[in-house]
Length: 175
Image 1 (tube, helix red, strand yellow):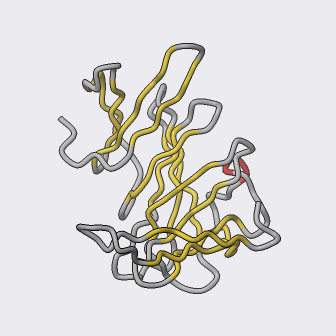
Image 2 (cartoon, one colour):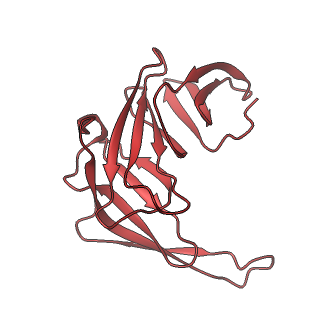
């Protein structure tokens, strides 16, 4: 049972789909009815995985980017081969101090995009400073991130709310 599943990734391979979800220190491969078919242990240290993505080679990418207290000196991405279970960590660092992030998007060319969480201000959009793709990240030293945009949420008058509605801003250098 997935007691605390946060995100799921669907990899479309031909007409079949592979569905994965994560739960603390492991990833579940699910069938079409969302029943766990097998567990894959993530055998590498992590702090607070918040999101899951994939790349065309079928590898999963866990976003160890959570930091509710904004104290972490670095964050990271964890590449997981769902076939072998091999995991590799890639450290990342923000240029402007600690942030709490919730979202990892990986563009079709492999460029990672991380979005921070800020309910009262602007959530910030980051990518690798030198536009490294995930397959080019270093395991030896942290890869510097760069701010490329922001999302500002403004309250609405929705009943049961206020429900924030996003306004997106991207810099001219945004990917």
